Length: 284
Image (cartoon, rainbow, N blue to C red; front, side, top):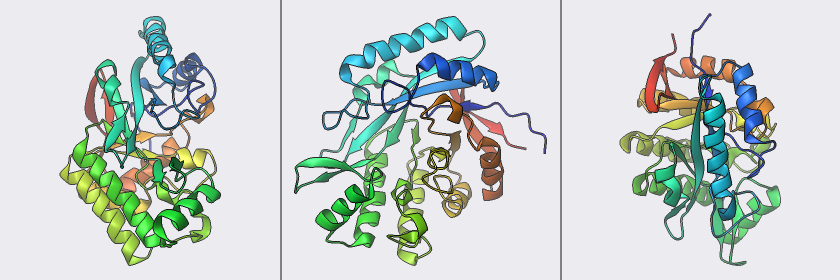
């Protein structure tokens, strides 16, 4: 079906965090794709990890580069400054919020759990070794407790903090290839994940249909899964499309199919940051 949709991507990473390539490369690629807008969303600086986050001393460079690109290309494409904020459940801190008044939008995300045994934060989506360290040390090998806590922590984040949209809400499945750790069809998982979407609806939180896990060949479906997306549509949870691009070639990865899947889930509109405002555009 021929569609006349405005396309954009607000979840992108570059050479200043864990992405590849300069910001201008992303703008030029977005122009070639005839995007209406592009937003940059480096992982916000935080006090616990610096290997894949924007460094505090690079924030000014990041914002000044976006401002320069807006001056250079702003008559051809809308360019927005954002950050992917990082939630730390132990302290109930959404790291990066201190920059919110200098940004056009923010993304709420949760990647890392505190590991008391080592006194460090460990990523839930990096390696199987890290995942199993958290599972065994923090949850005594109880995958139900681990996954349920993952969803509950995001619920707390949504209740306590404000941001423009929630990132990859079922990221916990990234390392679960072939149901290695859990079966998402089991009732406990369906109940926990559904409750997350219900809280998003109650807190008026926008979610993303994120194709990034597919772009990096980590998983074979979007975040969230089709079943969660149907629940979100039924509860009228707003949705925005992103590819969580870590290189410019991924800017529109799977977008056409994602739109089909969003429609199949029951959505009639998607959200778009356009002319500085979040608006709805019709899918059909």
